[in-house]
Amino acid sequence: MAEQFPFMDLELASNPEPRCPCVLLLDVSTSMDGQPIAQLNLGLRAYQQDLVADSLAAQRVEVAIVTFGGRVEVAQPFVGAAAFVPPILRADGDTPMGAAIRHGVELVAQRKASYKQSGLHYFRPWIFLITDGAPTDVWQPAAQLVREGEAGKAFAFFAVGVEGANMDVLAQIAVRPPLALKGLSFREMFVWLSQSQRTVSQSKPGEEERVQFQSPGGWASL
Image 1 (cartoon, helix red, strand yellow):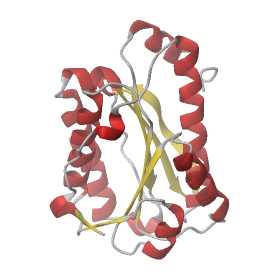
Image 2 (image 1 turned 120 degrees about the vertical axis):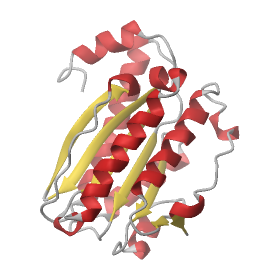
Image 3 (image 1 turned 90 degrees about the horizontal axis):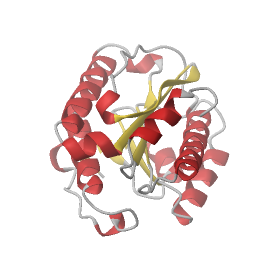
């Protein structure tokens, strides 16, 4: 990733703060068209605004976005929260979720290598999946990657199912129980995500396991 985006090494060098990386895996398949994709876009804006409201989180949290709708794309390479500009997402295509997860895991590994090369400490990365459907590709190898990554504390993987999502499949992919989004509460979900990352960013790398997060509350159910 550093070879494709050489400016990112300069960004790492200019900010010595430990990093709190998060990959958003976002379903933009055809079934997300209309209000779901509109609310997803609004949620991303709320996420960005809430992150930059905290000066420390703005320096420490990094965001990458991988979309899957017909094909897997990096809609946003890793960037610091202070420089993050939410893309405008559009819905189209099927749901290659397995490929998206594999790509997200690879992005995390590459970013951690960049941190090490730059001598930066980092918090355990998050991979946050949001989908309203079921994989249309082979997903079992991706599920194995998630299990291995969680077991080795390489990252923490979270799955959120929008109405219509196959929660049984999500439960087989994620080690943590997947959450079901209530209605189109994307904004509330992203504010919770931002608040959680802000909380982590206030701790020290290696101590984030002790952080107590707020309950998802009104935006999700198990």
